[in-house]
Image 1 (cartoon, rainbow, N blue to C red):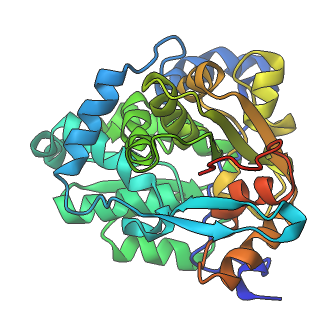
Image 2: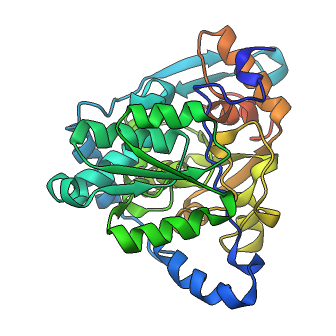
Length: 348
């Protein structure tokens, strides 16, 4: 099999294994205390970004040399998928290889780099979010700490440490509590991997670029893990007045946003467990702020299997695009016919 399907971690695949226990699975004696501490880790569940905030974030990022305006390029689909045409927004060409830098850079610029050089910042991700935060810490001179599960391969830890980050590894069930305790003891700025309004506003710049380059788009299909990117792109699309249908795509084995939609509240995957090759789309829970935005601006959450993702990665590779499994999920949904009849429509 090609290298990106090997079960062992191989860069550029990402690992965002946030496998900490939900509080309702904890012993009664610790549940209340941990719920209070963890509350600091979530974005607001009742606040929605405005179009003005999205536009301000885009203007902020337009002045950043390392946040790139990525191209929209056509991809011809095979007969089995209706022989239609897609436009791909190539965020795999973004600095650090993913969209993550958009939200993270907006968060840091808005928070004030000078102050952050004194207090430092903290995130919990061994994947694309961790890499983006490590890069920004190194480029801006901000002391950076990354907490990640002890199951993450040593190559990933070495990569982040080579970028100047301090890395702490803990057992997965202790991850969120360790992050909460570190925030309390060290006073760093939390740069959440996805559940943050400033991140959502920054990620929305991608959606605003899509509308600038393809104002008459009919459907936007976006990958979804914790929901930050989907929330930002969907908010940008709907708040700008576009009539485009927005679909968020999750792996079957990590469908926290779909479960949240079905239950009507922010939810975890059953038992906090995930099972998918799409590591970057596999946090075991949706964010609170991201769910609030997605339920308002996303029309539908669709699911793809790992086999469907593999088929999408192969097709993209045949057309010259080297994309990790997580980045191919949206294309997989279109190929598998899970986004409805798109014949004759402009789809990004």
